[in-house]
Amino acid sequence: MSKDLAGRLVVTLDLDGVTDKAALMDRAVRALALPDWFGRNWDALADSLSDLSVWPEEAEGGLLVVVTDWQGYAKARPEEWETAQKVFSQAMRRTPALTVALALGGTS
Image (cartoon, rainbow, N blue to C red; front, side, top):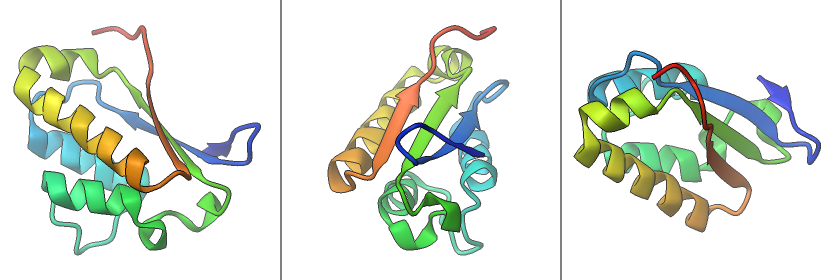
């Protein structure tokens, strides 16, 4: 984790090797340090991304989640990936301090 020029906490959500929703949720838990009660479903992910109280303490200036190596997951599970993108967009609309960016490139 680091800070960007705007003072937001930068978190990398690395999806390299992820081929299903369960693995995506596991990666989100680790990357975002989500609480034990996180439900590992789409609604819980949207709620957690939108809820500043579950963000890492260092995110007081905002949170930038950079999703890397997502292409393999998008190819393996296109419908799930479409849902994930909707969840990211929904969370950003709810929470102006949140930005989710898809990194281009990668190995997948």
